[in-house]
Length: 138
Image (cartoon, rainbow, N blue to C red):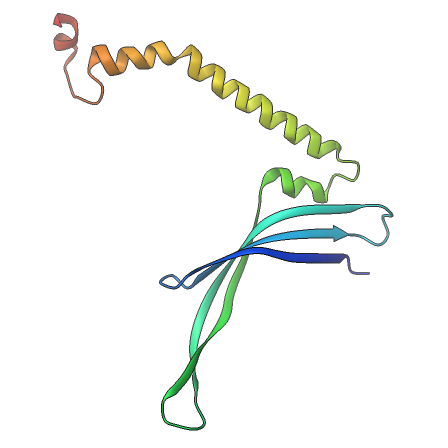
């Protein structure tokens, strides 16, 4: 009854101070009762670790540090996450189109409002604090 999941680890990064392990994973998710359905997704898994020292049986000195998983957090991008629910990729295509539309709106907004930014930076004085009287008087 369980789905078939094929996982491959693409890269790993370890933060020794915070005891965090970042794992970039490629995963293929298949459900046996939906023929032909597979969801190839990429995600970053954040593993919070805890460390213990292994006692050495030969001497009183501690052995190598052993890391145990304290918690796991799977981080999917939205366009990757919807692949689980979109059998015919309809929802995934909708999300992809929406991301392009949102990007175009951001670029359009930056172009349309760039004169206002120029005025704020060059005429009003940027980040300097000036009174309205100083701005109007020059």
